[in-house]
Amino acid sequence: MSTTAPTAHALPSYLNPDHVGPWGIFLQQVDRVEPYLGNLARWVETLKRPKRILVVDVPIHLDDGTVRHFEGYRVQHNTSRGPGKGGVRFHQDVTLSEVMALSAWMSIKNAAVNVPYGGAKGGIRVDPKTLSRGELERMTRRYTSEIGIIIGPNKDIPAPDVNTNEQIMAWMMDTYSMNQGSTATGVVTGKPVDLGGSLGRREATGRGVYTVGVEAAKHIGLDISTARVAVQGFGNVGGVAGKLFAEAGARVVAVQDHGGTIYREAGLDVPSLLKHVQATGSVGGFDGAEVISNDKFWEVPCDILIPAALEQQITAANAGRIQARMVIEGANGPTTPEADDILHERNILVLPDVIANAGGVTVSYFEWVQDFSSFFWDEDEINARLVRIMKEAFSAVWLVAQDNKVSLRTATFIVACKRILHTRELRGLYP
Ligand code: GLU
Image (cartoon, rainbow, N blue to C red; front, top):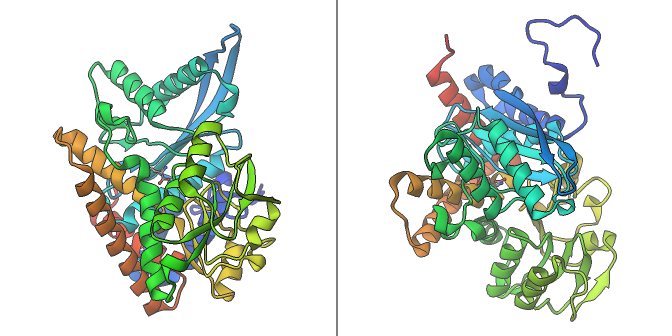
């Protein structure tokens, strides 16, 4: 920690760019974009400080009668363009730095696809696999109650993320509604369809990954119908994206998850693999594939690599071995800045998280709009609107990247930061 006296512009210690961690990575990304912001750069400080950080204690009774405390967070990075919006993750490695970075990436993502939201994120430091269903429900409800002072349909709208799902959203919606005395479906998105959820929401992130992948492939002359695809994480994002690529004729040659890494040069049978993962929880033990080491996954011959699990998977240690022509970031923050540079030098196109996985929050937006109007759309309409938004956002970012000769990540940050800071300027400072 710095010992120098704070100046008017000194950042609080946890915002220090030298602080290693996801937030430090976000700050580096903002620094890269600053020279492209013109006059709006005078507002850039706004992005380097989350608007609001809430750390909550989440005590629950375990099934054995003892009390256990969990640490929970909700961070609202920016609300210039609208209410905070972003998921809630349950993971044993969740830290404040991570939730801050994830909330900031939500600000960028929401602005990149131009949905009227700021950015927020939440999390609990817990391995949910160690909890019974009752414990999970009690923890979710107590957490929701604790962050209830800052969330709401017009304030900040949580959604699913790593290890959270429709059931968790149903409990969150119910807890918030009970506390305020009336049903408020619009307080969370990613709910069950029977409870104000949207058709197409579950598949939306994977569908968005596929949509931008197809668009980018056209630009680099890659034929999807003969492409080889490797996917890390075969859940909601990677599983759906893998299925859509396979339906378009691509061969999904390698899949990695917490159960190991499987490989088949001729292409895995994706529908059977999805059933296997549904039944057993991982790709481990799947017949009809060779098992390879987790490290070998990064060098399998493929054209498209889709990291769709956690942060910091593509690093300086493996980026030099990746054989793909294109990386589509289904996960948030899967590539470190050093790895980003290595991939750029090696002419491997990276479709960054802040555009590639924005399909989820885009359909979350549709869900929120449907909840407000109590009028629900059919799935074809939802998918058509999703594809249109993703294509338009991608082509705008592609042009900015060409014009400025920058990576797609920097281009997405340019588009998004300009939108955020423009609204910041229009709104002005209060008081
Ligand atoms: N957790 C997802 C994401 O990282 C979705 C967020 C949302 O729908 O609000 O984009």
